[in-house]
Image 1 (spheres, helix red, strand yellow):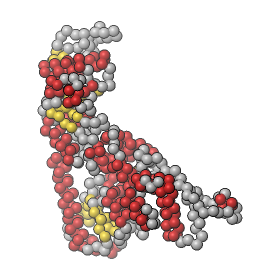
Image 2 (cartoon, rainbow, N blue to C red):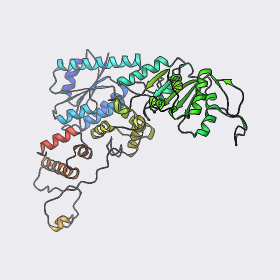
Image 3 (cartoon, rainbow, N blue to C red):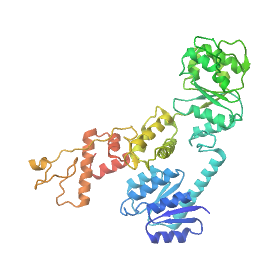
Image 4 (cartoon, helix red, strand yellow):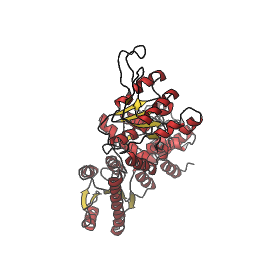
Length: 480
């Protein structure tokens, strides 16, 4: 029976849902955030109904959002249906932005909720079966060497790997720097019949031309000054296994000829040697160079291209992978937290918005490094834009205040004691807490408008809210 976690502080609602859903699902009931997270970690339900107004913040949504983020960090595939009596549009947008499957407004109509639950469980079952049959999410340990993705173009990449891995045909992997070309090479090797033998990578663009030939083919004693003895090359070390030639587009023309001969005859000769000998190594090559342009400019041999590119696998840049960005970000966040012993729950809405707008020229490698940095630098429960290095850390906001006496301007109270706090200053005399909060909110907005001249993207990042939320706040306070 499918497991359903119900999180609600209201005992009457828990009783209603237990009575109405108990026959269809195996129910787990929680009245608080901590209790819900404990049940979630122990039972891993596929679907959760989550009330946002949980103790101690019954009138707000802080605790509900904390639970939502923690659950999706633990398992991003969980279908979380947010149930709330709070119909603020900002909460709805934030819940969906954080990864909620659906949002349902109280009071609960059991028949409507059953339809939503039925769809959620069906989708979860389809996704699970798809992963089982086709490896939609190829995570460490399943032969995809740590690659993760579910966009259509990455599914094509995974399908190509599965099709050609068990053959010995040469494969050419194309893609921008940082897209994971070596991971494709390792995945092909780990799923091949050669997986028990060596996987030997060499970067053809990182080794000087004078040394690359010796690195690839090895050398005999006395072949050149300093050659004290026989040294095996990378091709020889890959005998029985796989040789991964990274950045093959940077290989000098003279070595392209020798590599072509090896691909044709499986024979090599060490530098300074006279004897040919056979090596059985599968070749997987990769480059970020436009090969067709390089061929047209006589920088790369066309016959070598046809030899190494029997099968070509093209990796998409991160900016074209859609929701894979958030999936990868959460994966790297969880892994980095485990590596560094940190407890960061997830990304703030502003951070997620900035991540989606950023072009990621360094692709997946850049995302991994920025998330790792954010985990180390973050001082909050959520990663902010500045932790990722996508925006400067906001300075203390100061606004122009109405004229006050010199003693107040000096930061003292009438009785000579220091006035606490700094930044935006409010005269709280006669104000209720709600009024003071609204006044402070408006002054912060005004300060941000003046400081950034109405640049909504930067203002939202500085204030730590999404752009839709910022628009709502400005509308509320009559700011345009």
